[in-house]
Length: 142
Figure 1 (cartoon, one colour):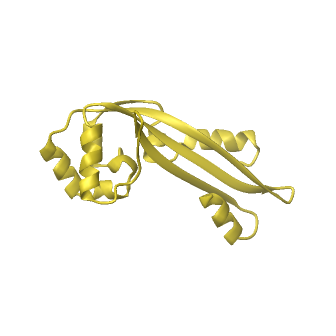
Figure 2 (figure 1 turned 120 degrees about the vertical axis):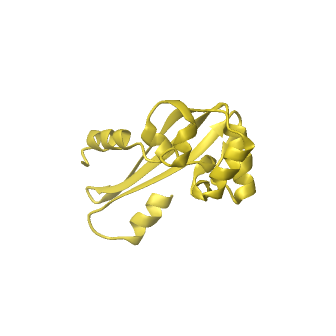
């Protein structure tokens, strides 16, 4: 929907790419925290365990005068080392978690708490670039 809205607000030969990321632990879905308290709750739940990061990507383009939409989703398993309440509080105080699904950015200070991942690092960052390029090449739009 995000990509389609931008596409329809613009003109000319264009390709619009939209992506969104969620963090999932068991049956619980973590988006972006609403406040610091919720960030602490999310990180407390994620520390010392494994969770999945899903990034969905949609791209909108024109082919033969017709709007085309393609989408896909990638998943990566993330293993987080145990964290003390103080470590969580210090990290949340940086404000880094406030605009990120699951209240952390793997590419920032939180990298110190990542034990390992199984899957694509870029999926956790928020744009599985390799898969995006692959899909675009398949459709001959790149």
